[in-house]
Length: 449
Ligand code: NDP
Ligand code: 2IT
View 1 (cartoon, rainbow, N blue to C red):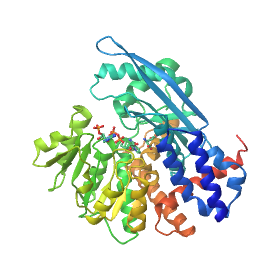
View 2 (cartoon, protein in one colour; view 1 turned 90 degrees about the horizontal axis):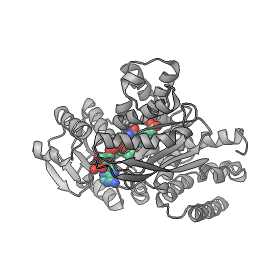
View 3 (tube, rainbow, N blue to C red; view 1 turned 45 degrees about the horizontal axis):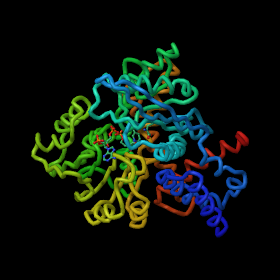
View 4 (cartoon, rainbow, N blue to C red; view 1 turned 135 degrees about the vertical axis):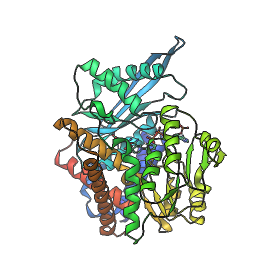
């Protein structure tokens, strides 16, 4: 055990040295590797055969210029990326993020997480991620379209239905997927399932828009069931107000829970009376059609707006962080615990800092890490790929039933793996080990590639 510890810390030092200026990537690698200690002790071949060395090195990273012309006729230039991290168990799969903060380190952390998440889904998908430092906020539809067309003009040569299948993430929703798909089709003259998250009329899957949020709630339900408890009547804090946040709220309402907050980068709304279906419809139109700010909710309904604040000070039973990475730190975790929080199900990727995660785990509350809890989105993308391959579309009930079953299986797998490796109830260890072993074994089977 001591040797493993020494080898791991040397290994992490090396990852930091070889990938300077990428703190989020270091954070994601450290979290996964530290969880793997028990499996690496039991199966030293994973170290001896260089599996870890290969696992932290992306198979391919593409960085490219994205020039486009704005509405004033001015030339603008953004930087585009696609990280094709690991294809041991299937074609690269993962979203595209358009946000001014996007850089190589952030996309590498997201692609790295995606490897294990996709492995947990039980579907044949490798790990990838991409995006650009483009900010869709305040841009006209025409500008977004021209940007997407330019982005796809380069990306098209690197992706394909059996090679790499991107989807949405922050700043990339149905509108952007439409523009990207249109340009791919035009360049390649083929109508294939090269992207997921497509609209229904041209190859999309029912339930894909809902899937990440619904899945995060299903995961919370499963965690609560281990303690003979349920979501009914619980007060739930949600951060973000985009795709994941909206459908988290919708499923919570279906199950008799009470969502009380949303947020965006300007602040938080707290609706102590509860966000109803009618109020949720307002948020969907506000965010998806009018592209407005969440503070307008407080103007419209009698709710509080907390400028520049996150929602973690609101007392609650359950929390669904659904905005971005490292949005919840140790102090926030302590405040939440003091306020009675006993469930955290991560809709976002890596929203809790390592110190916050440690505190949740130490206090023994139900903490579902993103790579397990938010895997419903990519799982349903996998189901969209299956439907595209078969040239068929399944009903809402069929897809939702499969999503439900996948989330139940992910939960069971994480729960049982944690127990097998001596950490009962620790979903971090369960998710990381279960996700890793499948990929590591596939890499061994396929030789040194
Ligand atoms: P959206 O773009 O639809 O919504 C993002 C929301 O988060 C917005 O309310 C946005 O506010 C807020 N936000 C984003 N960045 C920041 C920031 N730096 N500070 C404060 N608020 C911020 O994205 P999604 O809902 O799709 O994604 C949310 C999270 O879920 C991300 O972590 C993503 O990686 C993860 N995820 C998404 C999946 C999907 O299928 N879409 C699948 C699995 C995980 P504002 O508008 O002000 O920027
Ligand atoms: O983080 C994620 O899992 C996503 N953004 C969804 C990826 C996908 O391919 O559906």
